[in-house]
Image (cartoon, rainbow, N blue to C red; front, side, top):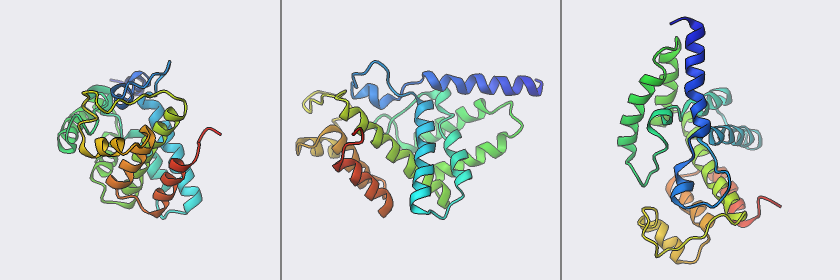
Length: 210
C-alpha cells in the first residue's frame, strides 16, 4: 500500500474507538443518554496526565507519557474493552498483543509503537508506571462524575459479575456509594503514590461538578 493508504487505513481503524463504549459503564448499568467511549477515555487520561505532571512535578518524560496513553488502547479496536472482572491481565495481554500486530501492520513506525505499548504493559519504567496509574485514576474519576450525575443505582444483591468481586461487595456492603467504592478499591489495588492518593481522596470527599 502507499503511504497515503497507510495513513488513512490507520486513521479509520482508530476512529472506531469513538464508538467503542467503555464496558464497565455498561456492566454497572450506568443510565445516561451518552456513555464514555474508549477514545474519550484516552483523551481524558492524557489531560489528567498533563495536570498531574503540572501540579506535582513528576520526573518523567511527559511527551512519552502522552504518546503512550494515545496508543495504549489500540488493541480494543479489535478485542473490545475487556475489564479486570472478565479476563486476567495475562490473557488480555496475549490477546492484545495479537490485535496490535494487526492494527499496526501497515505502519512504518509499527515497531516503535509496539515498543511503547509493551513498555506500558510491563510497567517497568517510570513513564509506564505513571501512565498506568493515570489510566486507573481517570476511570475512577469518571465513575465519580457519573455518580454525581445520579446515573447509577447499585443493588448489591443483584447477580452481576462485578458484585462477585469480594472487595467490591465488601465496600458496597459497608454502605459506600458506587464512586466511593471505586475510588477506595483503586487506592487499595493500584499502589498509588502519595500524590495520586491525595487526588483520589480529594475526589472522594468533594464534589467534582460544583
